[in-house]
Length: 163
Image 1 (cartoon, helix red, strand yellow):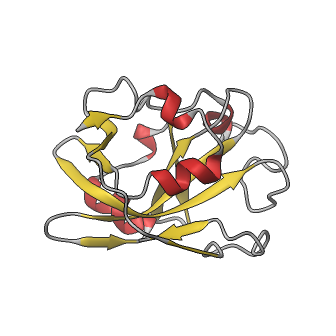
Image 2: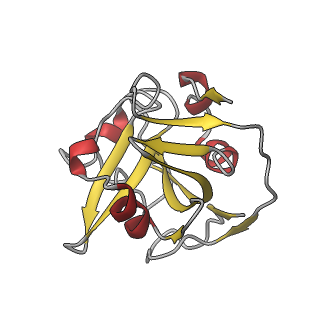
């Protein structure tokens, strides 16, 4: 098992989204295997938070790869994303699902609620953090690609990946 380094995230977003499947998400005392992801990229992707440019909310997406981007939706759910590609290019992978030894967290809100990930964990360097990171255990699960969930634009992109 080894921690994912910056070069893992400094790649095309769709590729990172696929390659995150089967990786272990570690947050403090919680951990689980990533089972579902979605890719978002500012270029030609109206569903991306950064499609219309940089704002205080989406600023982490423009930062270095390997950082967290956590936002709050519907007044009740946090969502965890991982920034990808080169600094200045707004792109990220939404972590939609994780399995733990006791739970199947099938949704980004459920994942963040169970792990206690909040906006306080926005813009954390997942490469250097002691207690918030991702690791590779050598698993290469098979997956399917589908349209992303919960969006109204960019539904033509098959950028949701599920094991």
